[in-house]
Image (cartoon, rainbow, N blue to C red):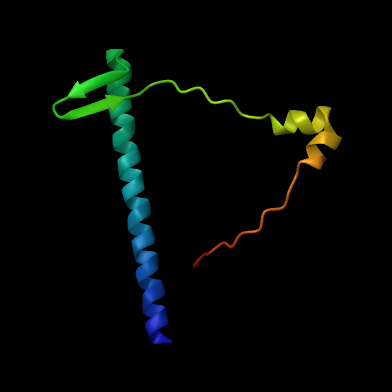
Length: 89
């Protein structure tokens, strides 16, 4: 049991490090995007690196509107998805 507890402790520490790293990289990304927006450039070559901050268009289905306007059709295409969720608290 002690070995399992040690693995859980190690797992939680790595998760904490990942979360901390994500916050740092998100902050750096925001700084880089601010520089690009201030320069008016959507593509920049800096040394050996190429940065792009461009608009991307994605088409999404408005599920709420479909449910309101065509409930029977909406309900006919609903399906259950079963998955497992792992968590350690």
